[in-house]
Amino acid sequence: MSGLPVRCTQTGAARYVFRGASLAVLVLLSACGTTSSPGSNIPTPSQGSGARSESLADTYVKLGIGYLQQGKRDLALSNLQRALELDDSSSSAHNAIAILYEQLGEIKLARRHYERAVRLNPQDSPAQNNYGAFLCRQNEMQKAEQHFLEALKNPLYETPEFAYENAGLCALQVPDRAKAERYFREALRANPTLPESLYQMALLSYEAQNYLSARAYLQRHAEAAQHTPRSLWLGIRIERELGDKNALASYSLLLKGKFPGSEEAGLLLQETGKTR
Image 1: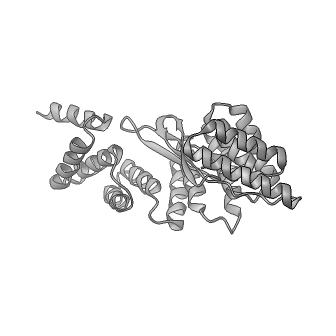
Image 2: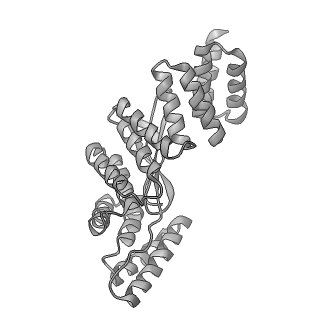
Image 3: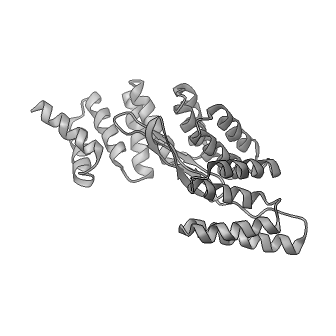
C-alpha cells in the first residue's frame, strides 16, 4: 500500500475510502466527522544508476514493503532505510517509507519522503496518488487534488480509478458534492465495479432525492462487494422513500441479523421504537 483512507458522516457514519499508490492496497483516513479508509499501492523499485547498488536497493525496498504489509514496522523501517542508504534516488523507497512514517504518526517525515518521491519521478502515479491522499488527510484539499490530477496525466497508470475515487472522497471533505460526483463517475468509467464509488454515488443520489438512481447504484454495490452496516442503512432509507416494504424489511433483517452491535442497527432500533 501507499496511502491511507478517509471518511465522513451522514447518518452517524458515512465513510470515504482513499486509495493509494505504491503498496497496491487501500488506506483509511478520518476527517469531517467520519471514518474512512484511504488506499495505497505498493511501489515498484526505481531504476537507478549503478546496476549492482540499484539491484541491492530494490531488494531492500521489496523486503521493506513485504514487512510493511505484514505489519512488521520495525523490520520494514530498517530495510527501507537501508534501501535509501544504497540509492537515495529511489522514488519507490521514498514512497514506501513515507507510508510507514505516516502510519507511525511521523507526519513531517512522511511529508518529506512523499515530496521526495514525486520530485524524483513525477510520472510515478502511485506515489502521486499516495501523496494526494496524505495531503487530503492533512486537510490540504486543493494541493491534494493537484497530485491526483498529476497521477492521472500518466497514460500508463494502471489504476486511474483509484486517483479519481480519492479525488472524489477529498472533494466530499470540502465539501463540493458536484465535483465529487464528477470524480466518482470518472472512477466508475474506469472500473464499473468499484465498491466505494458505487456506494458514494448511491449516497449522493439519495441526498439529491434521486431515489431510483440511488437504488440502482446500491444494487450495483451489492454485486461488487459484501454489504456493510452503512450500505444496509442506506438501503433502508432508500426503500423507505420508494415505499417498497419488502425491500425495506429485507435490509432491516440483514442489518439486525449480521451487524446487531453496529451504530446503524442502533439507529434502526431507535426508529422502530418510535413508530411503535
